Length: 58
Image (cartoon, rainbow, N blue to C red):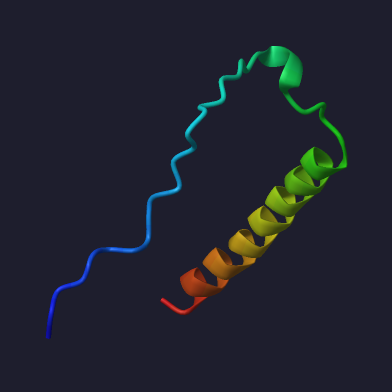
């Protein structure tokens, strides 16, 4: 089997792009933050009941 040249090239642009990231670009708190805190509270309640059941099984 003859070795051929590699045909796929890395995805490196010929003209690089530069950008600046600052606190202005940060997301404002909203629904996703509220949903996350609700999910954490639900996980805490589920965890409590699971730990209680494990203690009863001892």
